[in-house]
Length: 149
Image (tube, rainbow, N blue to C red):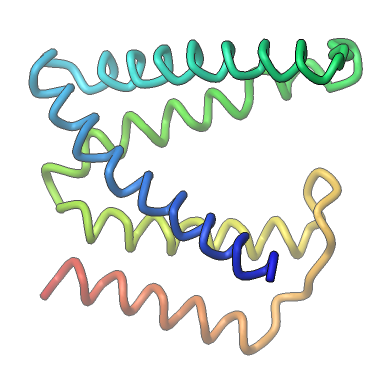
């Protein structure tokens, strides 16, 4: 049962990404600068998540160990997310939301396969099999079909 719930939440998360791209593109048109739209997107998200984190910490009586993670981890995720949001903001009006989502998923799959293969940051190691390669090729072909036709 929970497997289905997690899968549905993954689909919902993907839908949020698809909706976020045209919202940020519209904001960029209004502001006149895609990177400003990305900055405000992150700022609003940071404020909302900061409030939620504060409430959860207080309700659960958790104390955060700020010394535990490697210092670069505090920056890396946000920096990569900033590039993602900025590029999505720029690309959405140029190639469309569907093509962008197709290429995003293809890029995520290819990067995910390499991350799995290397066991990057403690991720379980998974070999790159013929089935995974075939799936990646089919996904890339689908992304190209969405973009070109």
